[in-house]
Image (cartoon, rainbow, N blue to C red; front, side, top):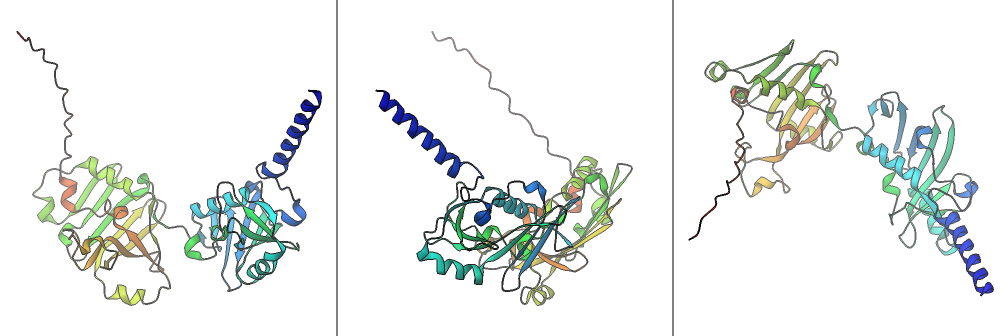
Length: 356
């Protein structure tokens, strides 16, 4: 009995030791000299540099107002979070086997992503290379700079290639904000429709008094201005994002030149300057849902879900989605409509029926 109990205690201690060395979160059982891929304190990271052999490179730096991309753009928060989460959770599982070593090293050298981590003082702290998926597909081959042995690296709950979590193109890193203006910052919003000017309008605020100017045919023969609706409209210009950047896409400039402009948006603010956007219809394509069913607000030749836009003083061409802009692209007469009164259904009274 005593021998059995001793045996069980030894097994328990061995099991605890194995768990501590291998499975304990963010711990590296192989030591940091060859496999220090885990960045435990991402709050201490001040800069990250990513590069590939084909010339792509990205630098993101921590600034007082967020992360900056390549010294001139705001970095996309979701991409920053993805990289930081990968850095803090990735752990080495095992060294690459001898049979897979040659292929792993070749992939790291030709197609790998070099990752340089700097602290907030600008000191380089960690450099490693991210290769392709491991031979069995369950992890990613990585090599610490100066080390001789590549390791298979994984993150908890994920089995697969981590290389896509280290993107190296600007379009994957650049923030997609079109408008992000607090409503109290807005002095006026002008929306001009090129082909339907009667729907154009200017919403202005002066000491929280709202006015809406438009075609006299509209404004002089409708109900009084719905000031509450005008006030709510000013709130629609926060967190308005695009789907992606089209800069450098072949023939995009030629396509937009022959496409009809849908609207022009001009916003005047108190402290954030003026902002301008030109919106263009997108020609109908294979993905267009209105190929099968027409949309009364969209000409049949154009896509009902997406548009092109040119922003930032004509520097950037973007693709936007209708749901993000439909709340902004109103019609003048809508500001003079009364809000619909929602009538709450009354509960059905309990009727006692006296059966005789």
